[in-house]
Image 1 (cartoon, rainbow, N blue to C red):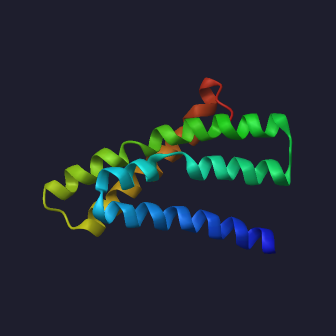
Image 2: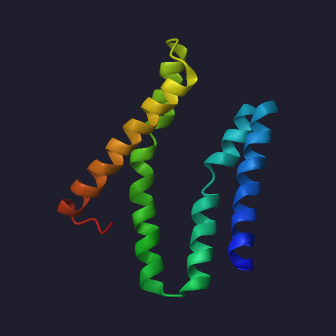
Length: 116
């Protein structure tokens, strides 16, 4: 249970640091948020729990393919905001787009030989 609390604390601190930096330095906060820190931490936690090379390789590959459908959200949200949509609506629509693209990747990817 302590290990879980440590993992949650480290992960939470990274998110807090990124959001606090973004208040004063939006670009730097975005850089911190865009780093694959969560993915790297996830791989570390997974490796510590189950040091299996094939499982880690599959996890890392799937992470790559799932990052791709999340990227359009970061283009759609600013366009919607600049067109005057309220933040929560723009965020919701960006997340909805991401969910649709994730679903597409999940169902279409394996047809092209992707192991997700």
